Length: 385
Image (cartoon, rainbow, N blue to C red):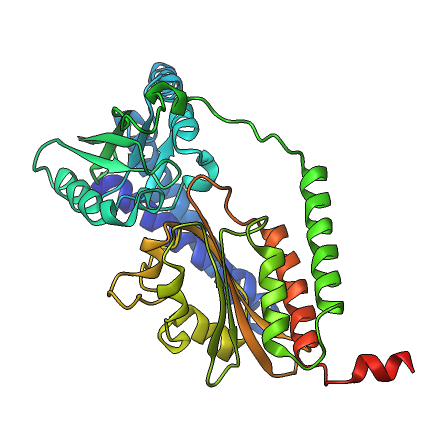
């Protein structure tokens, strides 16, 4: 390994010097002789030093294994992907490096999306700290661990996570192999553990989703055009009624920017709607940031449970609402105009996360809501005359 590092440093230095020689082509003609001498010296260095070092490393097998090693590596990768048990390879920070096919179906997350993101982001907030701590302990060589966690998409189903240390190939750091096994669901849920292994194909195509967004925009336009001019609270109430529950499980509308006031909160049945309505928008970092910066925010599986503040009982709102994705959009009619308020949307449970296309549609609707809020009283009557 030390020889390989030495060889890599030599190559990197050589590449840098070649770049300097290329930049020296613009020197005066009288100095080209010096540049040519330097180029010849570099070529001699490659022939006399780097090539013999390369040959030694190749003879010692430091520059890659033979055909049999590559075949073995491909076989192991295929076995990993085809294992019927959901497994994922993570580092000591619980960041996903690989996830097999069974794990993507079990978690409902594509492997390409999961790679590079913490596996804890797919768990309930209450399980994240324990999972991250146990993963770090396994990576430190303190032995295998096992604990029960819950996925955000199926919070009623306990999942047994078994963690074991693994050293992939010649890598210097220890990785952690995580095996996920569904436990026995509560009797009231009536769900079978095996059903979570199947990947649920979406029942709507992109064309259908586009049509749904167009229908939503049409309903929003109708609600805003029929809202009483000059009644800002009524505009927010009608807009929230359009979005809930067909588009979002929670709709939270705040009026104003510097001194925001919470006007409307719509949520699921038996949800702590009153606690969220009593919350001060100034205590919600996401709302404050949107009101000040005027930039929309889309978060999938929010990492910070306190990003939307806490309810009167001291519990994080995102945890109590079991939020899996959120949109926080400022209400601004013109790019250089004032922020009239902030609109926040939550989705929870197994509902699909907000997409970029949906976020763009909400951004357009937010601009229309702001224009309706700033419309002066009596304008509609004057236009009819």
